[in-house]
Amino acid sequence: MSPSATAALTAKATNGLRHCGNLFALALDVLRTVPRRPFQAREFIQQAWFVASVTILPTALVSIPFGAVISLQIGSLTRQLGAQSFTGAASVLAVLREASPIVTALLIAGAGGSAICADLGARKIREEIDAMEVLGIDPVHRLVVPRVLATMAVSVLLNGLVSVVGVAGGYFFNVVLQHGTPGAYLASFTALAQLPDLYAAELKALVFGAIAAIVAAYKGLNARGGPKGVGDAVNQSVVITFMLLFVTNFVMTAVYFQIVPQKGG
Amino acid sequence: MGVEIRVEGLTKSFGHQVIWQDVSLTLPAGEISVMLGPSGTGKSVFLKTLVGLLRPDRGSVLIQGQDVSRLREHALYEIRKLFGVLFQDGALFGSMSLYDNIAFPLREHTRKPESEIRRIVLEKMDMVGLIGAEGKLPGEISGGMRKRAGLARALVLDPEIILFDEPDSGLDPVRVAYLNQLIVDLNAQIDATFLIVTHDIASARQVPDNIGLLFRRELVMFGPREQLLTSDEPVVGQFLNGRMQGPIGMAEEKDAAQVEQELAELDAGRHTGPRGGKGASGEGVVPRLLPSPGITRSPRWQAIAEREEMAALRARVADHARSRRSARDAAEEVD
Image 1 (cartoon, each protein chain N blue to C red):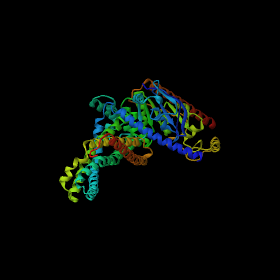
Image 2 (tube, rainbow over the protein chains, first blue to last red; image 1 turned 90 degrees about the horizontal axis):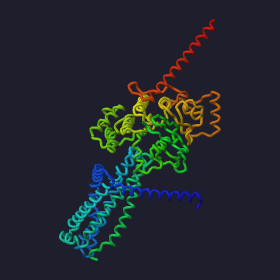
Image 3 (cartoon, rainbow over the protein chains, first blue to last red; image 1 turned 180 degrees about the vertical axis):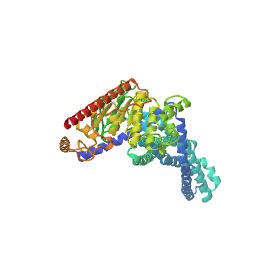
Image 4 (cartoon, helix red, strand yellow; image 1 turned 30 degrees about the vertical axis):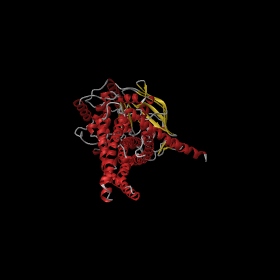
C-alpha cells in the first residue's frame, strides 16, 4: 500500500474513532447533566408529548400485523407438531420478549429519533445552538437532557402498548382466522412467558430510548453544511441507531438468559 | 463600563488549513472596533473564538484576567454572560415568538417577575423599533427585523461586550444607516465594548474608534480609525476602494507577479475595472458618526464630539483660505 493511501486510511480510522469518542462524551455529559437543577420540566413534557404523538399511531399499526405474523407462523408450526395448546404461550413469549422491544426500537429511532435529529440539526445550522451557548445556556442541559428523558419515558410506555396490541392482534388472528380455541390460547398464556420477561423488555425499551435520543442529539448538534447537512445527519442517525439497537438487543438478551432462569426448561 | 479584550498570538486552523495565525490585538474597553477582511478570511471564526465557541490552536483571549480559550465549560458559561452577540441572521429561536425570544435570557438567568421582564423586553424592543411585532414568529418577518430582534435579545442582559457579525448584510442602505446610528447611540448609552465584523466600508469609515484588517491568514493592521484610513498598505487601499487591482483576488490571493504589475499600474495612475462597491469610496478620514441629539453623551463621546467639531472647523478654515486664494489668483490674472 502506498504511504498516501495508508495515511488516508489512518485519517479515516481516527476520524471514526473521534466520532465514537465524541458520542460517548455526549452520553456522559447527558448523564452528568441529568441531576442539574432547574429541571426543564416544560421542555420534557413538550418533548414527551411530541415523541409520543409521532410514534403512537405507527407503533400500533405496526404491532398489529407483527403480532398477527407471529401468530400465523406459530399457529401453522404448532398444528404440524400437534401442539396447538401452546400457540398462545409461544405467541405471547415471542411478542413480549422480542417483538415489542424491536418494534419499539424501530419506531423510536425511525420516528422519534429522526424528528429530534432534524429539529436539533435545523437549530444548529441556523446558529440557534451557538446563540444559546453565547447566552450562557448549556444546550445539553436545556435541550438534550429533556429529549433523552422524554424519549426513554415514551419508549417504556410504547413497549407496553406494543405488547398489548401485539398480543391482542395475535389472539385475533389465531382465534378468528385460524380457528384456534380461545380457551387454549388464554390458558397457555403464562406457560412459557413470565413476569421478568416483561421487566426485561421494559428495561430494553428504556435503554433503546436513551440510545436513540443520544445518537439523534449527537448527529443533530454536529450537523453542518446547510439543509443538506441536516438531511445527512438524520439519515446517519437513523442508520447508526438501528445498528446500535440491534447489537444492544442481542447483548441484553444474552445477559438476560444468563441471569434469569427460564420456565419449562 | 465595558471590558477590555486582549488577544495574544491567536492561531486557528481546521485540519491542515490555517485560518489565521498569530493575531494579537487589544479591543479597548468601551470603544467601537471594526474588523474588516475579504470573504473567507475567518472573521466569523474570529468572533466565535472570542466567545469560546471555537477553541484556538494557540494563543489566548484575556477578559478580566481570564483566558477564554482555556476556561472549563462551567466558567465559560459564566463569562459568556458578559457577552451579547448579534449573529448574521439573528439566530432567533424559530419556535418562539419575538417576545419570548427576547425574554429568553432573562427567564433563564434571572429570577425577575414576569412584569419586570415585560418592562425590560418592551424597552429593548422599542429601542430597535419592533413595538407591535411581539407576537410574530421569526419565520414571519423580514431579515432586517430578525436582525433587530437579535440585537434586542443580545442587549437584554446589559452586556459589557457586544459582538456584531455582519450587521449590514441583507439590509438596504437606509436600514444600514439606522443600524449604524443605533450602534453609536447604544455605545454612548451603555458604554460596552463593541466589535463589528463587516464588509461595509462606508460603515467602517464612520462608526468605529479602531479598525482592523484580516487578510492572507494574518491581521494586516489594527489601530485607530485614522491610522487605517490613511494607510498606504496596498491591501488596505484595495479594500477601501473596492478595486480589482491589488493583492486580493477572486479566490482570496493572486500570484505575486500579477500583484506587482497591478500595483505598478496603480502607481502610474491607471485604474481599470469597477470600483466603489459596498460603500468602498476610497481612503481618507471622514467625519465620525455621533450619537443622536437626544442621547446624553458620556465624557468619552463628549471628547470625540469636540474633536470632530475642531476637525470640521479646521477643514472649513482651510477651505475658506483656499477659496480666498483662488479668488485672489483670479483677480491678479485679470489685472
